Image (cartoon, rainbow, N blue to C red):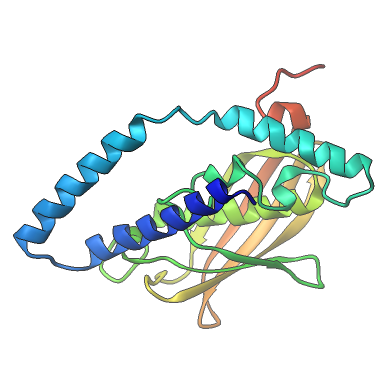
Length: 221
């Protein structure tokens, strides 16, 4: 990881903390005004930099993954590991200050397991996570199954069933796996628990595509 990438990750983490601290706490008017002035100034400075080309970053990541695969590396697809461009993505990109902090692992039963906390900026009804954020979390975590399979895909359908209130500021766990496939369609199921209590389930349908299409390149077929 380059020094610039490390600095972007560190700033994004700090901004996530700032988002949740602002939503979850009161502040006196002087602090609000000084923070506003600072935020406006920093945004102006950041906009003066070159615009990030996420497509170019993803294409470079794909070429890097292909070179590693040709050399015998097991990383067949960029989402198998953190790479520039993918870290900017919404919901789970570590370089995106509006994302969720996920701790993802693969278990011995071919499941993907993600642990995370939906903090106060993601609150809907008091004490409950916003349903859209729960769905977004499912969408991203089920996508890790795609990364593990090495079959780039787009979400075709996502169905979420809420079994119980999904709490904020509590550790949540999502366990997901490939349930079945039908041609280009991959059917993925998932469950979300809070303190071992089932709170939501998900069934997602993904449609496989050529890797160049996923990375934003023209479809060669």
